[in-house]
Image (tube, rainbow, N blue to C red):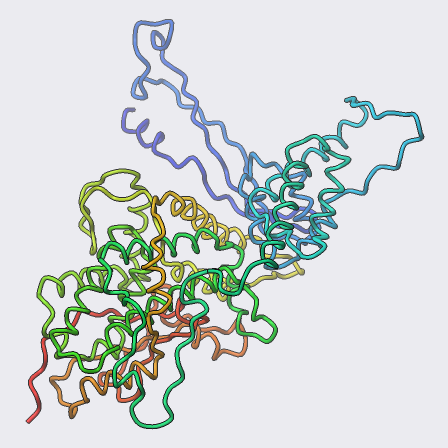
Length: 582
């Protein structure tokens, strides 16, 4: 009896049952099982014995059916916002509000959601709030007001449509007669004021004012037409260089910028159907908050390339000192839990132009090489980047001091409260999800099950955005100025400068393997139809092996549209210089 009771108590409380169709909509059905115990005589509050599962004579279960909307037409989805059972399906409203822009505009949803205003009353007659005959209408109105309140609070940018903001005007008109004194009406008025104030400041803003990451407006100088460019002869710097500042200062300012940009990311812009359209004609302004994060990521890579390869006349030990300092900056970013700049620095150090400098890497201390290898293992692409995902999950669950874990790149206690993830992981997951699942099902039904899966990722992003706002870092003007003036090198420039620093030797079997970067975006672009995109290199499917000795320029992707979706091959760190070939 004891063994049976233990098994029964261990049963899952929710069990998938199947699907059912009602009015053309498809629902997934689950059975929720609640255990109610009948105690044996003498047990319980009136007896002397304490209740225990082993002493129960009977086990009773109360089973209820739980339905979740899986696919339906747009009108049914909007109706579910108001009339659905939110206790049974609490994730429907937030999932719809977060993902609706992937299949319908805000204006269209408001047109179906907002009821028409009541006819005007004759003069001299006041509205009396009563319950009774109009109870059903009042209940529906309260549901609409509740949905609008969540919408205004969680996704305010959906209503931004300058200069008229017509969608927000429709909401204000409805709330003006449905709930004029409610918090939703106050939120709508405040939101309109914020929009107008932001537009006024944008018009008055001077061109030289800082807006966004330091490298957002900086463009590399064009290459020289022929021969060695000025980068190969040595860069001319104005003011202090970025590495002239301390490791902590550089890492903290990078974290400050990354946290600010990530907190501004609109989750709906990360959707695969939105982000994958960024290169199409007329979509240059799509996903601006995500593009800003990508620009910052590329700026950090350009800074690392420019500082390591910037001066052609440096000796190998001097260049090794710069490599070591960037490794220390990366380690400090890891301590600050800034995985965005950490990934950018590692990507630059693992790039072909820097990684091929065998003499410089040979002068790096063993301690720094060991740190570099451990940090590189964080973003290993094995098992769909399992290491970075597990480390991120552990960091999210950690509020205060923690015991040292055993994963690569683990840290001692005394962790900061903030957390900035590498956004490219979420973008890749959402693009692959959008590629694998169809938008529409048979019968012109919207595949809302796909939107639920997308919402799980977007909700994760929103949770991390709350965490990244808890940093206590102050801006340092000199460091930010150095970030702005730090010379950036393009892919072609960095490769050419690298060959000048260490001319390529004749190929031989002892040469180190230089890993190429695999651009996920380019692979997706090569497919004419989104539904035909291959899943090579993602979701646990290993990519094709890279060539052993590449002869052409490296595939380090520096464009803002592609870098965050680049999947780097794992590196084991630099090796000692190989013996020269006879």
